[in-house]
Length: 148
Image 1 (cartoon, rainbow, N blue to C red):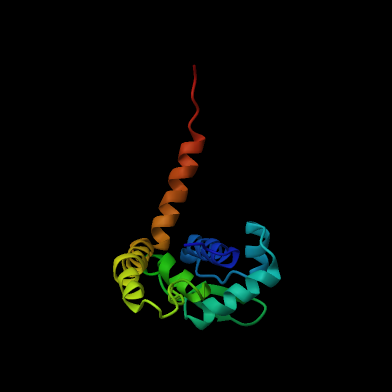
Image 2 (tube, rainbow, N blue to C red):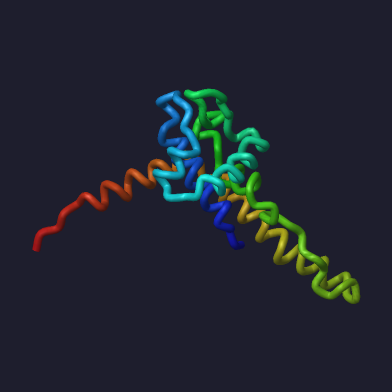
């Protein structure tokens, strides 16, 4: 499985929104762009997909921006990536071009379907809250000073 830049940026932007969820104030694309170093135009494309999937709410006006549509504990990387990555669970063309349909069915049942399910299960078992916890652990690990 390969996640595109758009998918990675979507995960990063949603994590940034999750970090600011408790504030209750909308975050603009410009703020996210500056903080994460991602092109504003590219983020607009990402947020259009996230909005269509009802993962974010858009607030219009001078105090507007984006907010998560629900709590960070209720949003998974699977939700985000399946909204952005069109080919996340895309079915591929048969390997043997219908010359050996039994091979295609065997590959699907033994390889591709279990792999798709494992990816879905893994990405669905993590929440934005889990990612925020991991970020906090990384920050605390960096702040440790070792003396020899």
